[in-house]
Image (tube, rainbow, N blue to C red; front, side, top):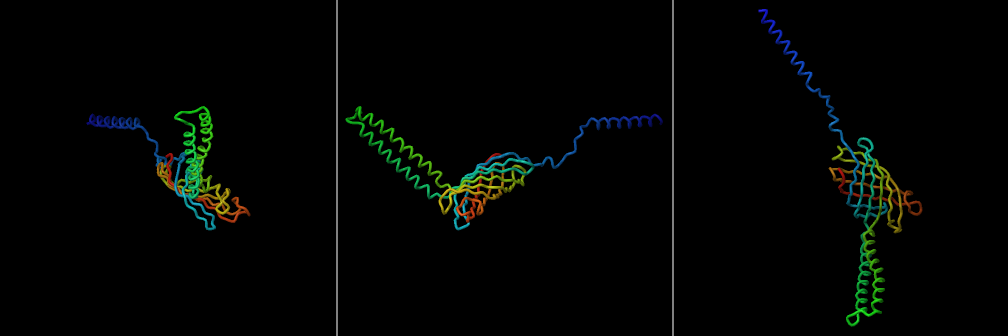
Length: 253
């Protein structure tokens, strides 16, 4: 009987020792922080956007057109970042036609002149010395109106420009760094063609905006307001200048 009790006691001691050894060899996992796995990550990104443009002066001028933009965000702390926007707004598309017409007229006249010189320089099916040299000078001279025609077409592209804007803003992202809404507010600077004077003016004022990021896609809306006395209108300024845009763009994740 004593022998059986001793055997059972030895078995229990051996089992306890084996269990202790198994527990000691098992890897110990550090406590998991549930928030650390879901912490959002933000990084610098730049998107190129296009959409609808708006320009108004608070005095009856409301113009709509197209805006082409570059929007960048640089993280600072957590969900906060610094935003930088460059926008090119075009609403004066009636200016496009006269420039293209001028370019076409000059180009048509130049090509006709080239044909006239070619006919004049060839007599009897061959070039003569005098007409050969004359045609060379004529061809060189006709290059200038041909280049002028090209410049008119280039000017037609920028002729509809109504405003150029840049804005420096503080941005706050509500998402996880990849998907989510955002808001922005800061200072904007605007160069615009005055709707009444028809001259280039400049102004500054508060800029606000909001939008949504979905991966590389960016939807955004923004408005910059240059109040009286903050834009270069004669008499200290009496109009309220508003420029804005509603855009969609694509950029880095």
